[in-house]
Length: 117
Length: 114
Image 1: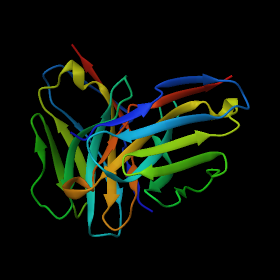
Image 2 (image 1 turned 60 degrees about the vertical axis):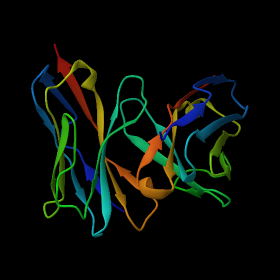
Image 3 (image 1 turned 135 degrees about the horizontal axis):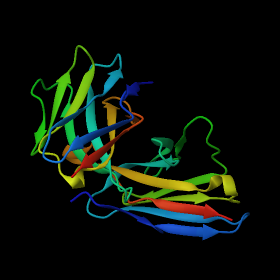
Image 4 (image 1 turned 60 degrees about the horizontal axis):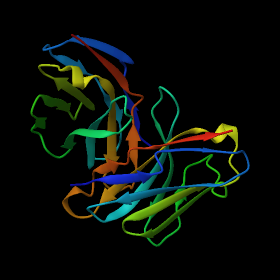
């Protein structure tokens, strides 16, 4: 149980285009989903927290107009990188926090490697 | 905010030996949870072990166990009978009960030598 999928696993796009990344909790309902960014050989950096049906909460320094987050249902959250630039190239990871007895545990998706040319 | 410190950027252990990864944290909260996650080369984050701060008994999961010292705010991970598949980055993570956020340490890279 507690499986989180992320799609796509890898994406290459041209500078100026937008890219959407999907995060799904497959076998549980997620009250909260988190979006992280990870640079090579570094820890995860929290970008934003999204709760189903409400606006995402962004961490300081993260541009909310550039990184659009939608949490339309208890099993799906999306991250859209708008007008992507080469500096947005990174590894993006989502996680989901479940309902019930495992609410204090987050389960991670496999990540999305974004390369902006 | 809460800080999580992993003072060992990299460690090595011989296969079948035991290794301990250190983690300290700083919080004024009394209710929180502690986790160890591993991130192998595939970069999929995998939950290794979970500890509730209100429990005095140390959590164990097969070859993995923790030494939780609440007063010292220390949460170390012991891996017994190390296996090649244990090679990964290990992150110590805390979660405050009343807040909707998880805090990560900087990670410890574990190498397992055959």
